[in-house]
Length: 311
Image 1 (cartoon, one colour):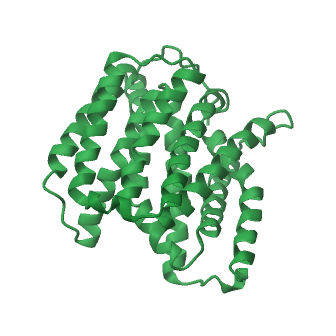
Image 2 (cartoon, helix red, strand yellow):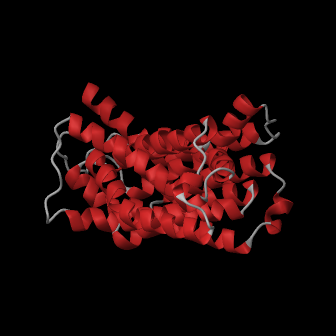
Image 3 (cartoon, one colour):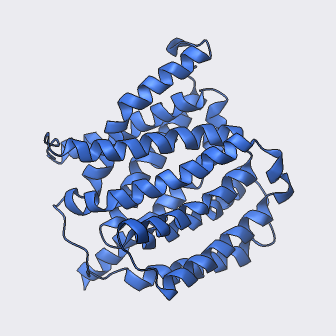
């Protein structure tokens, strides 16, 4: 019975990942005032990937073989696309746009899961996703002036749409890798595989802006932003997201993404004194009901969930 409880707890790991991502939009916008977006993205993945590698090394994990690296490099490509489009798009958009576009990630994931992995979109899953999406929309509408959505940058909106799709790709194409290698190795080596391209893009960004690496301020604020994004939003959150894939389908994991804006609003209220909109409780209840409906469909089961090597 304890094993079943443990599997159910790991199946809910993506919910904690969404909670860690809840404050990422605010921290990212804050960090952009000090560090250009692509460079900040590179630093984020470098810190996160390095932290994950330390854990793998401490646990005696093996380095990927020559035959395994192409798989991790492919996932690294999804990481690179997601980080660049997400961070540049975030810099160009406002809070309402960023939060609203977030809810498209679960939709893309469910569609890709059905098309690529053959996952069934059951009535319970479709209904739960719809309820959770409506609830998240109510939360966002209560927090932001949705009339300001059109005031943002169209290019930023387009980039965030791409970021939603590429994270769905990282989730769906990562599922067989997670099932074979485990969440820790998949998150670690996909992160490290993205660093060469992200590094080149960061150098290009600094050159374009007429900056050098020594121009990046090393302050308490910039250090805190990089550490939060690297350790919490990358190392911990990416591992937890992939950990959920060890136990449930990609489309089921995706529903937890709806929690991100709600968690962000709660953190804003708790840490920044921001007021919660009147629809927060209603939206949060709908979101919770939708997530529960989807997660209970497969959480805790072992059907079609192969065992992976111990991490």
